[in-house]
Amino acid sequence: MKVIIVGSTHAGTNAALQILRDHPDTDVTIYERHTNVSFLSCGISLFLDGQVKHLEDMFYSSPEQLAEAGAKVLTRHNVIKIDAATKSVEVVDMESGDVTTDTYDKLIMATGSTVTVPPIFGIDEDKVMLCKNYEQAVAINEAAKGVKRIAIVGAGYIGTELAESYARTGHEVQLLQSRDIILNHYVDKGLSDHIVSILEDKGVNVLLNRRVTSFTGNDDGELVIETTNGDFTADLAVVCTGFVPNTELLRGQVDMDRHGAIIINDYVQSSDPDIFACGDASVVNFNPTGKPAYTSLATNAVRQGMLAGINIFGNIQKYTGTQATSAMQIFGRTLASTGLTIDHALNAGFDADMVTFEGTWRPTYMPSTDDLTINLVYNRQNRRILGAQFFSKHEVAQSANAISIAIQNRNTIDDLAFVDMLFNPNFDDPFNYLNLVAQQAVEKETKRGNNHPRLTAGMDEDPELTKD
Image (tube, helix red, strand yellow):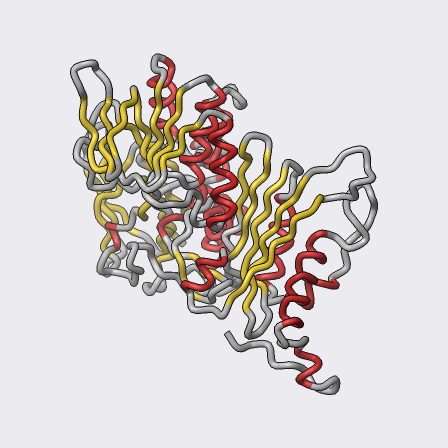
């Protein structure tokens, strides 16, 4: 079988390695526009503030390693056309300019995404930079060395992490966000406000409800950032306003969602049975809602890439979907999230509610402990868990993984309230904090008269817990 993989960051790299592990005789060709593969962009902020000394450490594979595994790796080769009807691709050698045509039996689309470039006047100014790939990270690092004031446009994960990094390096940081909430895909307004307070205490000037409308220069050589609520000046701006899938090559040839992300089935296969899509080029099957969604996370990419490498040989292993589980550190605190926030759950049409646990992660009689906040979101109709967010100086990221499993397995607040978890004063209370927050949700529903389903269904029959 001849397989062409277009793109080789997380998804493409893992697809190739999986194919060659299982079927080493497969003819695998990888076309990659850049000179490198497998760059961990989530580590950029760690490099910019000096926690990681070498940006090259953010690569976990290389063209040479993929070639040793048996792939034909063509870097600096840009696929300019895909014809699904003839199973052919046109490729330009970016060094020589030569254009060649190649054919495939199966194609894996792993072209990833690019930073959303908003329609802002002056976005192409020299002092305005984007942040996603290795080359952009190198350029930002060099540009920031000679300046004092840095503006970050967009307060998602990357923007917030960059704001922290540059505050740590002594820069004056402005974090501009068009909404009244930061990290809006991951937390609710209350937790956002708390994080904003911490950022401001550390010197980050968080500017909410400021949509950037233009970048211009002034006579003093400064970058002027015009917003819907005042103008600001900086020496450098980094735009972190989200991502869009790189899928133009297949537009009109396979089914896509409104973002342009390729729609996949349970085997990461597109509407064309010979084209598989993975990573930021495709949707994910989002378990909290049971619907496709666009979520650009490396965790999704590596899993979908491996599954593409498995399933090009047949419908072998199903994609279990995702809860978009993620975590970050903010000035020594862990923020972790999985599934839906309360606002997103309500907007998705659920009869959702939320309880908040405010306590400590282990008993206060221990020599030390830390405050812990948990928001647990659930569906009142069937009591299923929809999402959770965690915030503490203690490392609580693995608890988000536990709730991710609960969502994937369609567990209820009643399940979580009594699920078996260890007890040792070094680690937690007799009831783990996950048990305790679920017990809060059960108690809240009981007080409303929404009793445990076993009380209404009868002890000799299984309660119906599948209504969404």
